[in-house]
Amino acid sequence: MWKGIFLEGNLNETQGLDIQKCNVLDVTPVIADAEYGVFASKDSRLFIANSTFDKNFHHVWVENYRFALSQRIFGNTFEKSGSLLDIDGESPLDPMHGVYMKDVPQTEKLENNNFYNCHNGIYAEYSGFKTSGNTMTDVYNGIYSLDQQGEVHISDNDIEDCHYGVRIQKTN
Image (tube, rainbow, N blue to C red; front, side):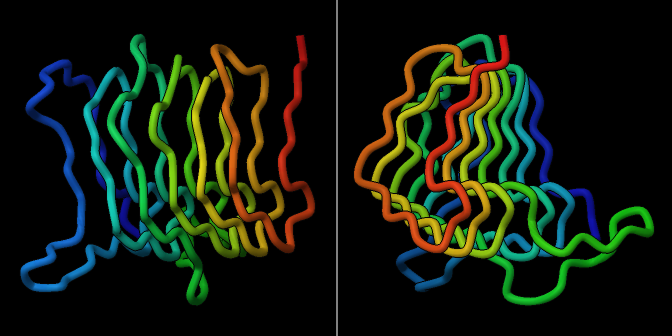
């Protein structure tokens, strides 16, 4: 298993990570077999659309933002089509997170994604977010918000075969 794609600190609006389907060639990006498909921190700019994340332990991990994450994460598939590779000698059974957010004041566009066979579809810790049009299938926690900071808007998500569809927890 490889470490994944890492971004740290980028306040320039015109730079950052842009992953999306190439319509000219009809090619869908696939990020697979990584510990972190994408790891973004400290206000890194990212745009992730119409891509497939497969057999990563954490598909997308976003943390430590001072400002809202205004870019979009939409139209993606987060799945496990087979066994995950070992991480430091351990064999995880399922991806831990589809999208994980920690200390992100607001994520504006988290929509029309498909989450299959992972522990948490969307997991937000000390974060605010807007999510709609997502599908959660065979996911333990469809949408999990822990100690939310900022607004949380959840609308028109299709949640099937989940232990918890939407779980909002406050610990303090």
